[in-house]
Length: 127
Image (tube, rainbow, N blue to C red):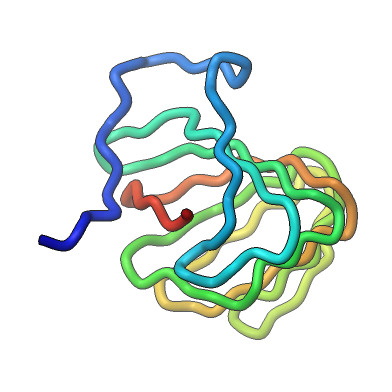
């Protein structure tokens, strides 16, 4: 039986980043990461997932796409080069973006980056 990617809701209403174990990521959507990437699953709801993401300087998140969810990101600190559907932007703190379903996207951490990411529905795309 194939394993589902959909995450089960967390049993908490509130979350503190300091209480959540980080997960080191080696691949997203089966595409191997090139550099240091860590996530913390802050909260999982019935239809939404909130992640805290840490990208090491130089991390390349190779071109990939998500066919079963969309995601949004918000950069808290650092500088991140984004290419989404052929559009390019160098993001700084306070920048938000969306990865629509089925759209190729790529990123490169020009500095150490700290971001929030929201996925709906809540899918685990990493290993």
